Length: 398
Image (cartoon, rainbow, N blue to C red; front, side, top):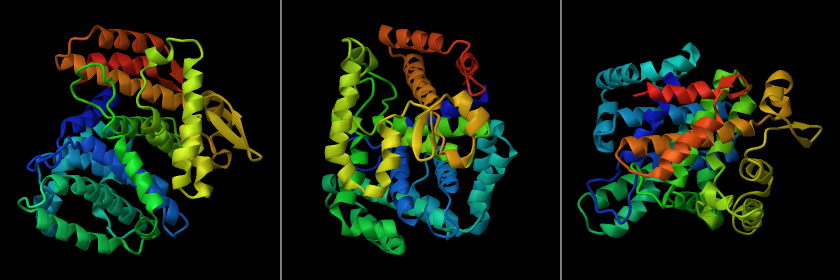
């Protein structure tokens, strides 16, 4: 099944090392960079979402398209890539080659999705959506460079890279989000907080291969949730809510670390106690780092992430994803498929275990996890998506 091949392709980025020609005090991986970029894009977008031409859908899909391009162009240094972009003919040839590499795995999401992929790289870079993505890419790169510079203060290319990043930063001062990051330490602290989830590893008790960070996992969940939303023809607001819930659903783990499910379930009431503690800590440590008018959405993404909800007369109501599809698949109801997020969360965990076992990790815990998750979704259909078939597809995915 194509969705399985697509998910496995995304996980290639977990093994892609960044700055691999520099001394690094910690591993910096492409998957984590892309996840951090999209968290930053959300922050920047919130300040400019009233601007003409702004679109969360274009930001979400543009981020995904650029991520896929980066996976294909894994061995190209940024300096080389930027040089190619300056040559219109060569860049056009490169874009065609990238598209041909990716077309087999994106074709199942429809001609519209394919057309949007091609158009993203064919249109102007000066739209508000592309500028937000470009600024987010820059900020995540600079965040990494601060670590690299600390380890290579007088290293080869360091002054040149620093000068280049400073010049790039000046291009984005018209964006309100970049202005606010420059002015307010609490906003920079929020970006740092998201970045810390790069260093918190999942399955920390097992020698996984590849290693997946909490932040990287969050992006995978966001992408799966969004693409499955497209498959069921979800309304735009539903797609957006599903994506950003996936992207931020584990944000509280920056305060509690990644506590594996067997531990949460080991003592009756422990899981509820951890959830309550997470809410308290989010109130104290995280919510104060962002504008108050953002909190309603952020709480929806982080506190009741696995509940399917709609909003009617300003009241949040718990429903099922099937009910959303039948009665509430409209932007006016602000729908969110918590069941999808949970299913995507489990699908990401399954893929992590599947890859580790296929890469030679000998773990009875991973084999048990595969069996339990697959059994959980046997014959299970959520809002028209047959998750049992998706898991069966791993038998033929490559």
